[in-house]
Length: 190
Image: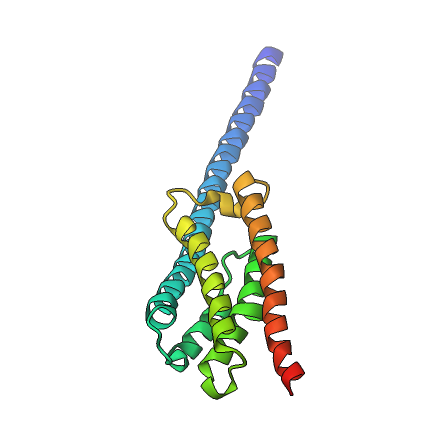
């Protein structure tokens, strides 16, 4: 009788362990699937943001910079909205911060200045700066948009992410200063 009772208790414990293990395995699978879904949604969002930036650069290059058009005002709101709404990641990382700074503190104010023709300080210098920034942004966004795998964008420790961030950070610092100097010309003229 004692043997049957011990055996029955062992079987209950084993059954309980098996059920616990099955629950753990199924929970792990569910969490893994949710993680992958969230990661894919994040990558889609990132790709979409970089694609919009890529298209903006193409449009500005084709319809304003290289067409000798004086119609920057037609694209003012488009550029402004894209610059202020560019948020390539749901997580704030250095790359996102540097890109936002470049777009908001350099690209948008310079383009806005060009769009108000009577307020342009130096058209040639402004166009030169805009073209350089546009080419830089296009080259980065095009590389990302045409990449097969952009998972490295959400891995801040990856070599590609670190290299891109350093490149963007250096460019951002340089061009914020150049655009700032451009606008300071106006006060030195008066």
